Length: 346
Image 1 (cartoon, rainbow, N blue to C red):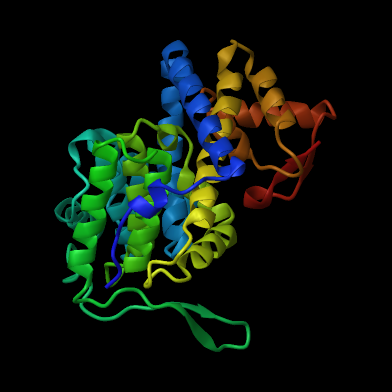
Image 2 (cartoon, rainbow, N blue to C red; image 1 turned 90 degrees about the horizontal axis):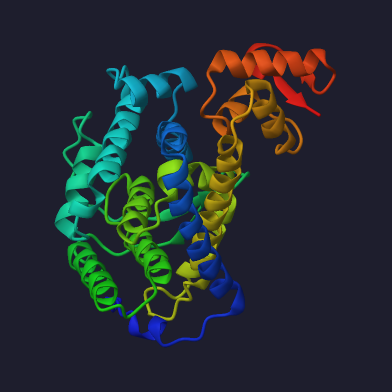
């Protein structure tokens, strides 16, 4: 079985691109801390938006979808799910809520990971919930002509519990002893988790929840305000490409995790930059029209009412709608489409 050992990673030389990501993330995390002290109430509104986006996007990556309205009701009002997809979405909502509220009380151990997986399926009758896989799984791709190809074979069911224990032990050791930069250790842990693929179902969603948990425990809170899952969903081809490249040679211990590390760090940094943009919109007290006007200037190409709402969490829906309508009347924006298909551009 693959031996999990961070020492070969700890001792290697990192290129300037990867080190640049780490330096920029630390700088952005320091700025975020300062911003939160200045305008905590306005920025708290970003939390609910991020929860909704994270829950919706992480499930959508796996083809689990419902309407935007229902996602909001499930997350904000904790309404009762109506079907299987909504039951899975509600489970993700519950785990994400626990991580938001209690991340510092959730140790990185197999037992706690299994508990979170059980909660993920708590709205379903799933006998595999909270248990490692019982059958061999495969990471496959289906091509346009219909044929399916196995891209990677994860560990076998009997190897999985030991492997899950090992990656947790190794991670806790290098973090506890300050042996490895957390922004390198976290992507490596997630990469190994995905290569083990420990569950019959829910591996992708669990990996994204664990990414948030590990980041919070290391003091990187951007995912609380900007959805990392939504960023991954928007460019999921890059996510899968980086993962596939890093998996080569994993069973033999000759894999190179750098593509996946860089992918995840670039995503985290992008989220911090989004956070800065949104802070700029609440930093100075402006009229609703001026706030929407500034937000629109930050958008390239076509955008929707929802895009502006996310950038302006301090504004009500009616204020956003009224401001967009006024900008169209003034000739500052052009409107296209109707109803849900309405979009705007400069």
